[in-house]
Length: 282
Image 1: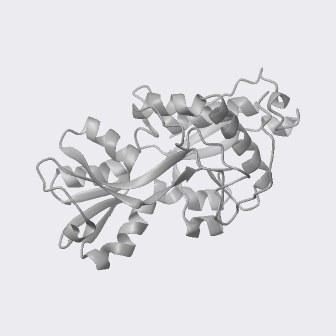
Image 2: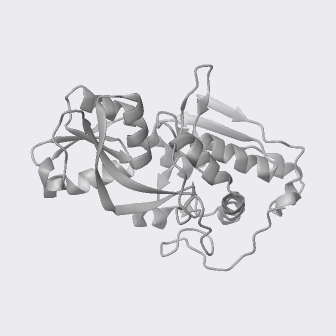
C-alpha cells in the first residue's frame, strides 16, 4: 500500500534554511510505516494510511518543500528496506537502542516510549516479570519488543510467539493463545480503547527510550535537515498538538514532544553529534 502526500510546493524551501531551490530538492522523500500500528499508522476506510506518524512526517516534508511517499509494510521488513536503499528514512516509530544506533543514524526523539504489557480482561495483573513464568507472550516480529522478549524469555521462563503485526499479537491475547502482548505504551493503550477485552498492564520502567526517525549512516545531511524541522515543530507546539490529537493526553513540558535536545541525534548513543546549532524556523 502506498500513501502519497504532496507537500505544499508553494512554501519556499529556503524559508526553513534547509534545502537549496533546486530540482533535486523537489524529489519525493521516500519513507514507510508499519501500517497496522494504530494510532501511529493504520488504514483509512477510503484507502491509504492515517495516524500520528503519517501526520508528523507529512508536515515535516511540507516544511522542507518536498513531496513525500509513505509506504505501508510489515515492521520486520522496514529496516532491511531502509538499509537496502529503498527508503530515505523511516517514518515508523523506531525505538533507539544501542545496537540500532551502531548501524543506523537517528534523529533526536520526537516521543518517549516505554514497554508495556497488555493482558486479557479478567486475567491476573502482572506485578513483575517473574509472574510470566510458564506463560506465552505475543509480540510484533522484528520489533524492539520482540528483541526484549527473546532476550528475557529464559530469564523469566515465558515463551515468545511472534506475529506480523501488533494487532495480530493483541488478537492472540484476546483469543487465549497468549497470556500477554508486549508493545509500546501508546499502541497498547490505543488498542485497549478499540479492543475492550484488552487491558493495559505492567510497564517495564527501565525501558524508556526515544522513538526517532532512522536513516542510513551516509545520510547525515538529510538527518540533520529533518531533525531541524522536528525541532521547529517542537518549538511551535506542533508535535505536542499532534500527540494530544492521536493519543488523547497533553504532553508534559519535559516529554520528548516538547524537549529540543542539544546537538543532532540521541545523546549518549552512537551517531550523536554534539555540535551546537541554531534553529532556523522561518
